Image (cartoon, rainbow, N blue to C red; front, side):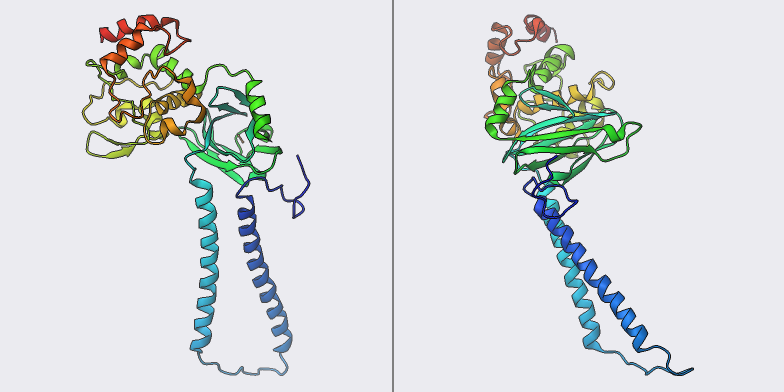
Length: 374
Ligand code: CUA
């Protein structure tokens, strides 16, 4: 941990774009508290001496109201509390509204480690490598209990909640090695559930990426699960026999549900639809999809979400950074086609080039048959 260049002793370094804002707000609050605490204590002491009992049973002078005084002591605290509110609101909005062009990293917490995966496929445990000066979004969930990801140098901290996705973003400003903690008591080895964030120059980061075994990217893993292991494609692939809701171009769009409700097809919605399909049935479809609860891990769910995101939608395929290259066959990603319906031609192209859409899938050749059987 670098301890240099902290402007207040005991404070962690400021290493993200909004670290100074959080500190600024914090010191503003301390200054206000200190000012009033000192003022009040001093006044108590001064008055205690000045108005001490000089003769027995003296009566005080009667005081009548003062409009000017009362207005003043209402307006000044009002202005002070509004500046606190404004400062808090600005910091909050900066931290919790993720920019669209952020590089996304998936995080799964578990007792007692952090598992992270880059979009290019590299996996890390209790370590996170990020480039300096780049917006990074962490999409997070947990396999078991509540955890909380805390990177003090970035002044960023958020609960990681079972059954839900939460996300934060940051932009690191200084290369270095910074602490990463779990900040929610989560069992016996909670205190050991931590590690380091390595902020690197872009070039060093690129070197690190290329020097690290990548395996499948989340999108590739997701596609493999979708097309082969879980057989989602048997209903969700396009064509005349399609029984499941259309997924191409879906991400982040508004979906109309049976019953008239409209929801946004975000990470959370996709995750819920896989685990609890009958909960949010899309208008025009039957509730025939079985649940996949217990059959997929959180990491697989994250991959499936990444895959469906790669099929296009609002800010889906575009914001997914490096994943574009991993989906060259256009197995489905076609953001220019808002309807996303797979034309017969594209299906023929797919099946006539076995493995083109999924080099890792030995059973790919049998897939067209499976689709026809539907
Ligand atoms: Cu995980 Cu504390």
